[in-house]
Length: 291
Image 1 (cartoon, rainbow, N blue to C red):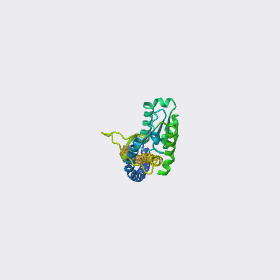
Image 2: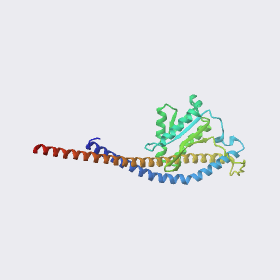
Image 3: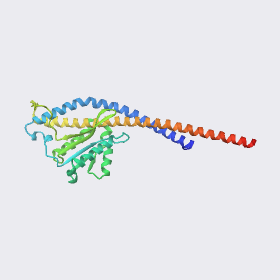
Image 4: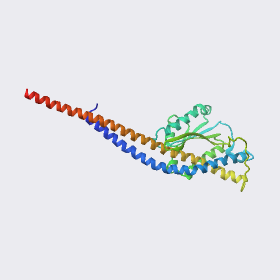
């Protein structure tokens, strides 16, 4: 048992920490509300657009009409690791980094040792993680400074152009999909080439009428649909980050409260022992004088 001064100092330190974690929890809750509204608004539109995109790619006569659906194999891989610029959000960042490492070890080991695997880190945490391990990694940490569709478009266009120029054969997104404030689902999603819609009991051919032309559709609708998909993934990750941080700070605040309760009990016991000792000294002194 420490001295009364040591216990008081520790209690004051924990109270300060609890104030910080409680404030961070409230800030994250406010940011989560806005991020949750954004992802809820865009998700139905993006999901339906992705379904149309898959059907449209399947219905084009030749792959040359849609350069974003050309499957060239898996010789050159780009993994887009999406997490956050800051920590204090539980296992949010660690889960993404571990999943990317698992993909490299198990699925793309050959490409990695051949020097044909690159990582694009969206979020400072991921960039620092892979840079320390000497991976071939590029980064874009400014996206979260102003997470808007216009800001994201610059990143997506670079990826799409690199795919068309055959710098990459496959592009995968690794991110946390938002479910609720306490739950995030880790996802690995093939971004390019575009996947065809599968899983139907019977093959159904969708007959599209192209207006104004197939070329216009390829040059306008398909790239915009891909940009929307990428933007949705970042919105999912952004909402998941604030949900994870709010949950982590809530737990930290509760743990601080429990620790303060324990320390307060310890302090009272130490104070009672100190008072008892002082009383015994007084009684012993009085008896010695009387004796």
